[in-house]
Length: 247
Image (cartoon, rainbow, N blue to C red; front, top):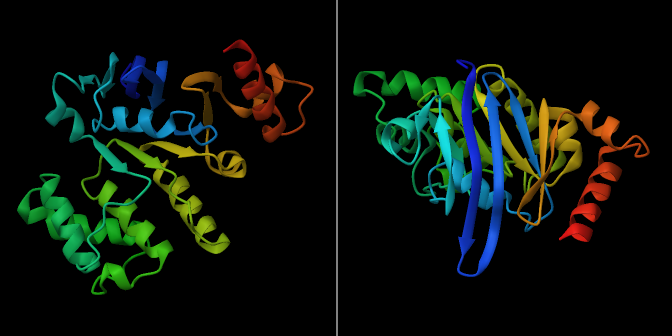
C-alpha cells in the first residue's frame, strides 16, 4: 500500500550462539509515531540498528517505501533518518558546520544545503545556536542537534533510539513535543523504556521482551487484551511476565 513507509518481516539477529532478536515484524505508515517499548536488554536497539541499515539481520527482510534495504541500501537509506542512543556529534564543530556536513553526507544537492540546514534548525529549535560549538551546548540542545541531522535531508522515515535519555524534565517535554511535530510529516519510530513517553507521544505501540514482540497495537487494544490492568505500566508488567514464563 502506498502509505506504508516501512515494512519489516521476520527479523532475527544472532550474536554467536545468542539470539538478540527473534522473528520480529514491523509495519509503519505515513504520519504515524510508533513506540517501541521494552526494558533494557529487550532487543530494541539491535532492532533499530537493523531497520536503519547499520546492522545486517541474520534473517528477515526490510523495505523502506517499497525499496529493499538489503538489496538496494543506498536508495533505501536516502529515505531514512536515524538518531542512535548516543548522538553522532562532532563537538568541535558549530551547529551550522555539523548540519552542513550531515546534509552533504546525505547527498542533499549543494544549492539546497543552506535551505535544508535552516529548515532543520527551525524545526528543532536551533535557530539561535547555529554559530555555537556543539560541545558547549546543553545535553538537551545536543539531542536536538542529533535529531536535526536525522531530518536534514527530509526523509520519509525517522528512527529515534531513546531520544530523551539523560534529559531533565523540561528538556524531555520539549523533545516529546518535537517528536509529535515530526510525526505530522514523517513516519517515526521511537524507542523508549519510559511508559509515560509512549502514552503522550505515540499513535501505536509495539512491546519487546527477551528479543521478541509480545504486543503490537494501540493503547485501547492493550486495555482490551488486559482489562484487569488499569495502566500501561501494569499491562506492560503482565506481558513481560507472561513472556518470561513461556520462554
